[in-house]
Picture (tube, rainbow, N blue to C red):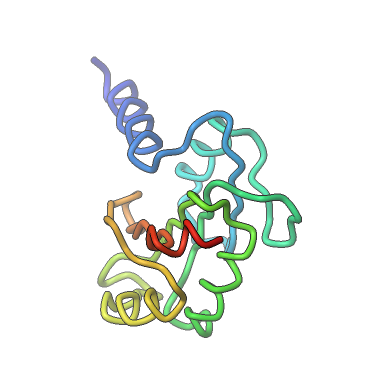
Length: 144
């Protein structure tokens, strides 16, 4: 197997691990020139167009690129919950430790419940980024 084929398999399995399926609607928030373009391309190839934060559609997945100096994380998490389907997922994508804009895990763990979310897992999503999977607690999903 070539290195390129192995890399493609790795990227495909990343999309699977993120739970992104072809029929899903995906919104992207916080895009800038430092995001992982391979991950974006992979998700876009799987679902088609990535919607921006101004969409009126209900979305299944939010890719939220977040850096230390981007503002109030709780406010942004609350805003990204609004268009999210009841069983939707927010992938909070932050720079890895030692990278510019790194967000301390304690900031995430403190902000998440305040925004009415819970973190269920985390995954490396590229050389410079890590993703935290955030969902509404089951009890909150049943009340929406």
